[in-house]
Length: 367
Figure 1 (tube, rainbow, N blue to C red):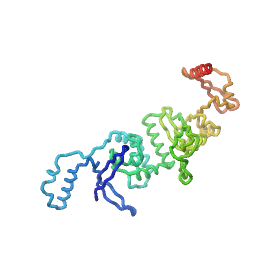
Figure 2: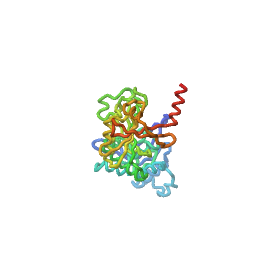
Figure 3: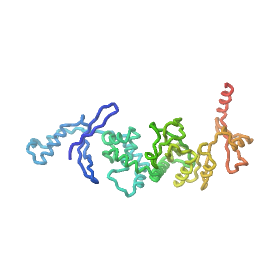
Figure 4: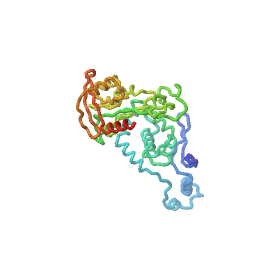
């Protein structure tokens, strides 16, 4: 057992040092430091309290040189050695349990046992993203020295990485996402008969695309069609399904070169196992291939897909040429239903915005 000193470098270049009471343990042939007590920042350390601790240990060991006063007299008045904020962390922890995320993670982990409470480490990482977003290393320092996380006194970067590795598999992501969604649906009384789905992309500032050895089978950062107009940078594709109220149902992440046309089958299959009942999937023209639409109709499924009229497809031209009366939905929306002889299995709803049409008319006249 010994006094251990650690340090953290702040963004302004200053260094903060911490003092800990630690003990070395030999695990699987390697020696690891186990923190027993965090004594706090070195510049705010109560040196007199340490001296009183030393005197107490000496009395226990029978050292007559430090038996001048009883322990109660020598200890002096009560003083605060350290304090940590817990308010936001406590609130997030209660939400975490209300959404049954802890139970979902317990199901994913199964009978496996770890030296660290993996569920608490994952919660700490989520709390860090919500309260003070930082890197995994800085998050570990934040948990160990800056805040009070219920059930987790300290953690390091390696523990954070191991905890995240457990969530990489599709099965783990699906189980946790399903548990969280149904808990939220129960708490908020959500309707899940209408699900909106779309994708976006986000890029990484780095030099070059990862090669095959670096990327491996799990490599996600690839060059592809960039919706951020940064085709020069590798990216990932993110898919999100939400309810009509905008509450997320499930999130997906694909390699950056993934096409929108190729993801509908996975989205449909992943949500089918959730037994949501009768669901209408809403998507835009990026997913409107005939194969995708047919796949969405399997097992009695339904869909609404937006198609741009200016694309000039044969069906759009035919639908626009049909006569019929518009029905007023609201001030800025009129709709007309059309059925095509060439495509009897689908209903076409032509949407017309009178306000936007007038703006377009004025703009054309000005040009």
